[in-house]
Length: 179
Ligand code: OFO
Image (cartoon, rainbow, N blue to C red; front, side, top):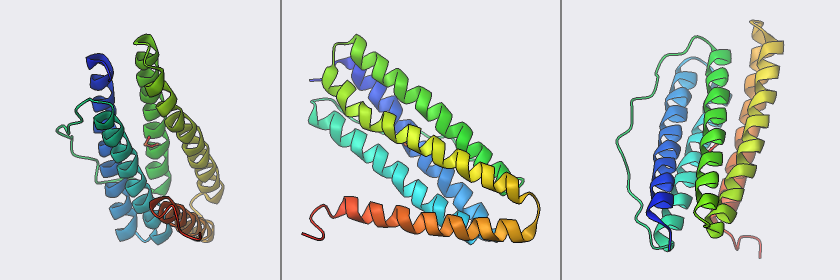
């Protein structure tokens, strides 16, 4: 059983994960119409990942005797200055989500809810990985500068990363595949 305080904190995180998914979906759409096909694939895959993060929280909360519910969401941005701008905003958002996850973790520990703390460890590790991936992408976009060849190469790299993301999403959705 989760306390009302933990339930409230998880529901707030559910809202943020759903919002993250919409933010990345909007960025993906912008990338697609602005000629960055690889970045679009990366962001579409990221949007799906955020939805998976949301679902995982919903199932956890309901399984622990809480009640997961959805909230209103603000409209995501639809216009961006450049690919650099998009990924700068991705990093800013991921940093915000990391702080948020840490807060939910702190709430659960304060409530002596170690099961929730344990469950949230997965998110804490995931955030570290995501921040580091996005920092590396940003470094490469900065290196490419405004140079078309560099950005073209970067977009190809993002397409390759998106394909790996999709493969691991598929593996996670089909746990017995390959057995
Ligand atoms: Fe970084 O993505 Fe959800 O938690």
